[in-house]
View 1 (cartoon, rainbow, N blue to C red):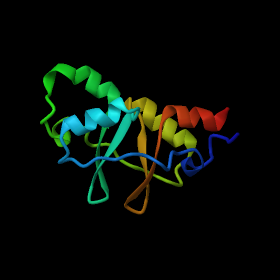
View 2: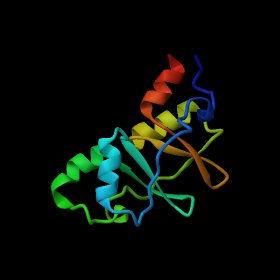
View 3: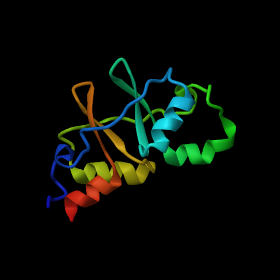
View 4: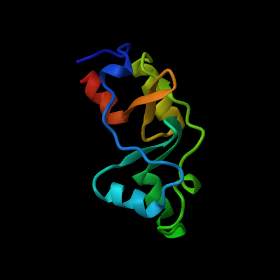
Length: 123
């Protein structure tokens, strides 16, 4: 069990599947159907957006398999440094209504943190 001031690096998921903005939604759908609920979108290793099952359920009728991930991903999400606290991550996830936050070391994405990860770190 950790406290609110524990770095997110202690509770983040460091194994995750990512996709590229140029990938087609058919490929993203396959990954989501296999159990991935959140897909960070990386362009040459840099975080550019987020694709999540929740958003796709909302958009289900407005895209086809040939649509590009870049056209449907969430944009403008600032990454969280790996030394940010669980409390800071929780505030951001709640205030911005996000399914997760990407965690970075320098500019490289090294993990993602979800509300479940944060709760797991506190319980």
